[in-house]
Length: 454
Ligand code: MLC
Ligand code: AMP
Image (cartoon, rainbow, N blue to C red; front, side, top):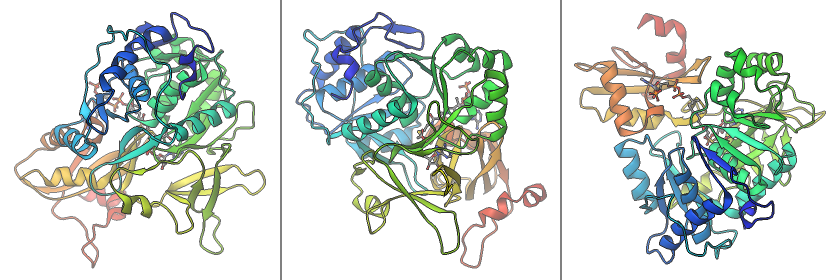
């Protein structure tokens, strides 16, 4: 059983989980999830989807799927029409609604699924094309959560606090399933605001760098985290100034960890260990890493093996095969360096300019470009991630178009894809700079001088 806390080994409590202001016990959760599982039993569809708002309903749906042995596809609640339709069509998932007040007569505590069976299908962006479904098994999730529990000394004594979305690895796998495996209390704050984190009174806090940077900018809220046991950052690079501000305001040296939807979390600093800003620690138990560097170079692509890896991209064997080297190592696409003395890893960048991380969300430039090109007034569109102190990178679109405003194009992308894939800025240009092969010269667009001229 993946969710060991639901088997009663740590007992129960009335306030086992709080999500966006509503509190529940394990027994109530199991009752609601059991009703979902009963509905799903013997389903004629290969997977089910739930609109993954930050709510107890989403938690009950995911747990219900695990009990029924049917993979869950959490749909981003802000997904636009095109993205929603793509995810439902690609996965064949049947969309369900959850009534948290319903209860199973005899809630099951065991699943009939095998550990290697698909448990979750999370849609994530590549550099081009629509998002792909990443299939994750219970075995991979269990291996990751156990390795993290060891690294962070995470236990039933903890109260975990975060307010991250429930349709990605960070908020859902670590932030919900992690609590239900370790038995720690969970307080999901609805939104990850500094105020909400300050009021939650937790021992263990998760956030993406944008969240930590906003907390560092709210000194009173930051001071309220002084009594916590451990603060953890991940999903994108934590800027060193944010690390230092948080240390000054909270007394904590925040632990950074590194992961991907496809690999789950693979590298982390350790609770009680030495933590250096700008580093993501050492491999978790079971994970091996190597750096594919050119001769003479000490940075190169980070490659991995281990039990936390995904089962493949749904229905895309070629894409799955392309994600591995010939000798079976997973290619992360991230560029890293390893300290020879202590094995501590540093992520120095991404191999592809087309993979953007904004507010911890992974966004493929090609996906946003295609959405813009679907607009009848747009003849060319090129999307880049521009460095941003709050978001890490912000999406900027350079378009050749007439008779349409930037705000209209932004809304058009939001309606097709989702809110967080909207360009923050649309710049109208006479032409997109291209090389002799006709490929857009994105590095030129990132050059400030060019941006000022246009
Ligand atoms: C956003 N807004 C816009 C806009 N973009 N309005 C107009 N034009 C645009 N282009 C709106 C938003 O809808 C919001 O409105 C308001 O502006 C503020 O937006 P924001 O600055 O983006 O803030 P916020 O919405 O608070 O988002 C910041 C954030 C969010 C940090 C809370 O980015 C977030 O939740 N990130 C987490 C991503 C994550 O979990 N990634 C993990 C991936 S798993 P309104 O009305 O809503 O206020 C992974 C593996 C691993 O990476 O290693 O963990
Ligand atoms: P996602 O698929 O949304 O899980 O995004 C995975 C990507 O997030 C990785 O390939 C990295 O580029 C980035 N990432 C995650 N954690 C970190 C980190 N601690 N430091 C730098 N980049 C990170």
